[in-house]
Length: 333
Image (cartoon, rainbow, N blue to C red; front, top):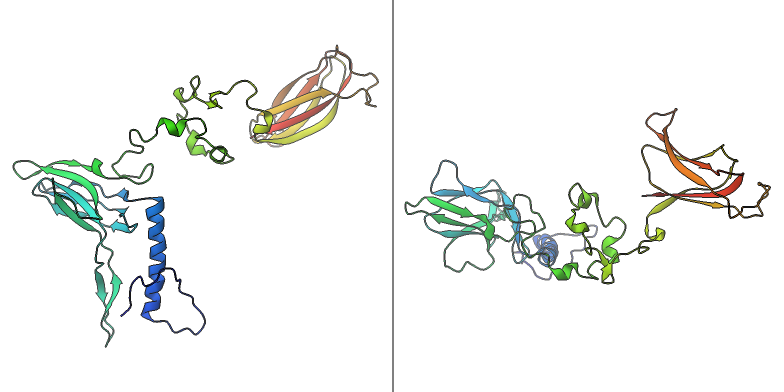
């Protein structure tokens, strides 16, 4: 007979023409079960993952139904309940769920001359624990059920359960319990560069109404203990893409120079820098002077070749004599 959990530091190694016995398959299962249970214990803890809501059974005053769902027990084992389960309640109790221990065997072999079962049935165990009584070790509370003087189900409280995750679907628990976020979690230094790196903030985190006025109030965001002030955020901190870097001759007023930036399928935000070219430029006869002025504006127009696209342009004018300028444009992401 195969032995369970002999040495989970050894992983089965397969090779050609190897003769495999039942013990080899048991060792293979035990290794992966051990690693998965360790993961569950360390990274998730014990509690309800999904479902397992306790509700009144339709058409009955003395029964409740535990709906389908699953949980993780203190040892990291998954507890799965499928199809729901009905319980008759005759006194005030707390309904607990647990992993079956010992594990029941099922599906006896029908092969001739062979004795044994072909499956382990990981069937969830439901227990009613009378109010004031210590529950068995390893169980998880689902709900407190009270009965009235006539023996009928009176109230069902699903809030006694420990819910895993920030928002377990249909768990009956709170997404973030009161007091779950404290001042230390929001103090200076609590937010690290890793937490606000590229792609660390997802679209789901900034959906409509996710950012409120309260979160943007005075002194809410601070750096080094003081609110973020002028010049605290520089261009180098922004995610941009260089789309244009070219010299442009701007004709004398009232004429204008038009520079094509790029063609996109919608609006865009740009950082635009326009500066005079040095006096050594061979393209303009005169050198720039302190009295020179240059103005520009961004223009967006429909593309005649493709109406679904937009041409982004830059119009420049001097208001005076001809000038040569260097135009640098970055698109903000």
